[in-house]
Image (cartoon, rainbow, N blue to C red; front, side):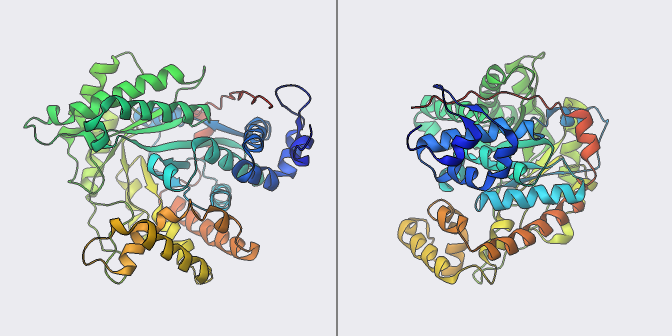
Length: 452
């Protein structure tokens, strides 16, 4: 084809109106060029590069999969004693994903999840098709073989938009789910906890809007999931940063959900709860993070009820990456099913002494200019930038992708070391055999794009 990138022409047969894969090994040999096209290429280059990655990954042993089988086994009491780390891949996505795959290989730990939330997709400029391709490209680059869990985190209803126009907000979530499943996200967390209405006296009535929307979207997931794949769906009962969750909230939510989806349908794999944390931590005026008191007994009890009463893996902890290192071993001790980790890795990168100061200055100026309306009265510059710098990953995606190789390598090593530490603390190391036993690696063929 005229004007077609030579690398894509080498790995794909482009003679027809739809491409086909020539050689998966050639994709591996050129993976850095191909993943770059998947992120920064023209629209046609993006679609072809993403197709090449998705087509090659399972041939090379990396299969986008659902964690449902493992979580079901946990609900039956067949496995336990570990907490699955779910890492939000906000920025430097290829380097970060590669570091996580290296850590998984080094710890023999396969119960690890790559994820991105609805809000993060917006401010990091990473739609589902992009981040899924980047994660699978990282698996190819690191020679990782086994199931790859790609998760939609916090597919969250915006309470204000839902109140003003529930149909439009519901449709936006439906559209996001369609895009995610098409990109081979086979783990999806539906978060309608923002709709919980505490003005009602009865907990069942408070949780009813949450259960209703979660059930509606779960039905859509079941309609769209590929043949042979049971997508792992998570729910949420308490917005992170609000009051601690209770067993009554959990039971009323799940009972309401089950009435709506039907007793014979596949239910929820897990439920996210609130136990005292907040997303990103709470920055103090000097930039340090306020200490928090996590209610581990609440986590233990909610996880126990989830498993014993509803066959779920248990409770999910959010907002945990900025906690002190010495706290992480406690999550598997209380049988927490999953823990979500994001801001701590962002801090590792942006606070690194070698992270370019001129780039940080550009980011601060951008934050001051674009997000000034988010500054609260009395907030210091340090607090304001700490709170808003997560929104720099999108506008500065190319600059961070193109940091000097020696710096990216150094950051990658430090990220890997942190990932290895957390995997071991969470007892998710040496889980590979267990994961391979319970997780069905169903290869789903992706539809080739039409060549223009």
